Length: 464
Image (cartoon, rainbow, N blue to C red; front, top):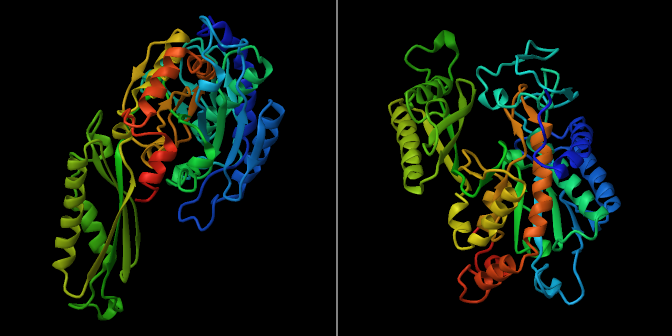
């Protein structure tokens, strides 16, 4: 038996959301690590150009693709009665500009070319066997899937990712914007839309022009389970350990060879394997994750990500990684070590707490769609992590996608439609006098929501 949609609005939006995901997913937009330009791959520009045309067709003005691969557009405010008095929306000239953001690239962690979406209509609750690669989606090990009996489930064919991360978010924003554009009577603030490149390699916010974007806050559509609202993320470091050894012909190596590759392997093996790893931690526990080891006897590199919600604990993870590497290399005469540890993003919570009205508006929108709000921290990051730090408060909203970065990736059409409907609800929430008043009070000088995004950018520029 087919499951009902969360609302009539979601049911109305579902076909458009699905059609858009199918169209966008077929485009190869994988980003590439070690980028030398923005975006890192040409496929992202192909999708970007398509989105510019679709945004213009949906009633947006100034839909543009900039030189760095960022798509931006504006949907003008609507749904206002003359004077703006009474129980309806606040006066149009008092309502701030609000942003909606998703990223166009997909992860380089699994094959992403030749994606062929498959719709499994009215899911029966059994194992989904995909046609390629022997890939199976087993509800016994995927509780989120087990809960979607009766939903329409979208997968790829088993040998590629689907790209719901984050093309589900792109599709949901586009469907909501198209719906609002076709219904000028629906209350909404001026909406600024942005689609970013290279989020999956940590660069989505790097060249984002916050003052030009002009929004008081924004929302990324880059979450997962129905009803999720995320206003807290990991803080993140990346560590690169480069070991230089003493390379000697193996036939003459006795007492002389110092293998950099062997030292790198010893460092990885010496790190905790029963704790502080992604597979042994959950909830608010952090980890150290060596995700790449390569090299030769002469030179080897370890790339690791370090994560925690608590900055003090994250500093401890860094100290452990560094001391482990230094002690092992120091014990090998002739070997040298270079450590590069750099910040990737900070926990967005510290930037969102001074402006509680931002997340509160999203909560009200989720509830207006008839959903229970699931306020859970992200064991990862989004564009919103860095954008919040850079001065644009940006919590994260669910998309209905699951098993990201893998050939098992899937999405519920029902939940995607609910996300698109939530955006429409969010637009209405931002025309309510109480929401507008809370935002105005918090961002006024001394408010103390730390001022407007422009104030925050001027005071603490990106990269500071």
